[in-house]
Image (cartoon, rainbow, N blue to C red; front, side):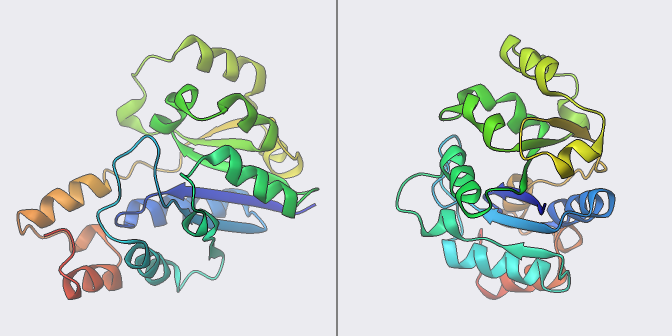
Length: 211
């Protein structure tokens, strides 16, 4: 059975936090396939600032020296909004026997009940929750508490060997970096190159993004 990890997001821009978190996850779990999945039309967030091709270019630059990472463009190519339940259904149709694992930040996990057909997601994939320090004190809704009670596991083998239905909380390291802060810093002409892969920083400068 193949194990497939899916790391979705706007990646506007991709930064060291995304890459280092993914390296930590892959070092611990060693998924057979690890996909970066840029979304086209986020439903719960504002639209991206960089265009689709620019975000794709930056992801490619960030992961080009990491052959264990792949880029999946199914959401970019879709005409409709980026509903994760539809994306996971698509992955499942292509990989009927594989274990699918969706990687979520703790903040995204807490917002799960706002997602389109959110109760179907755990039936389609496992969830790997990155426990970020800044959200650890945020209270959980009753729906999320119940979801954890029913599906949480502390065995990483469940994530790697079961097709769906398990939730694993993983400390991937605390990287105090966010795309929002990077965009705000660039507007003020602040130095942010230390927070970005070098070639991504050069690309942003070349195209004068986020000014």
